[in-house]
Image 1 (cartoon, one colour):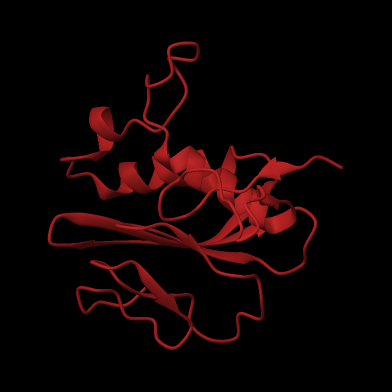
Image 2 (cartoon, rainbow, N blue to C red):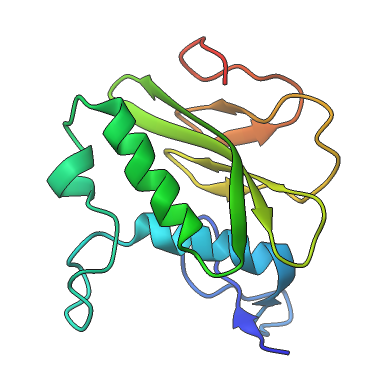
Length: 156
């Protein structure tokens, strides 16, 4: 079994617990973290793999083709090791900020994981998804399972 270093979702730095020990992550949390790293990796950013990454500057930011944006981001998530499929995918814009909500099927668990990517990326614990996918305030990146409203008043 492999162990992956856990990243702090606020700083994207290695997560350290109160005992000053490094935290590790596995299972659906690890796959969710890989999604985070993938979406934060800009195309051409890493000099040893210039063709890797999401083309944020080249095709997404400032673009007007939402279908192309959704296709690129969905494919980036599908290429993450451990992702079996994207069950739900929704995008929204609020004050020039792109937010993405998705429900992702991952290896090793029967429950899909909900994922939000916007001003702050967060992975909710896998659990029953009888209710709405996610809710968020785009400015603060807060998540709950209580409502399906976006920060701009729309719904996912």
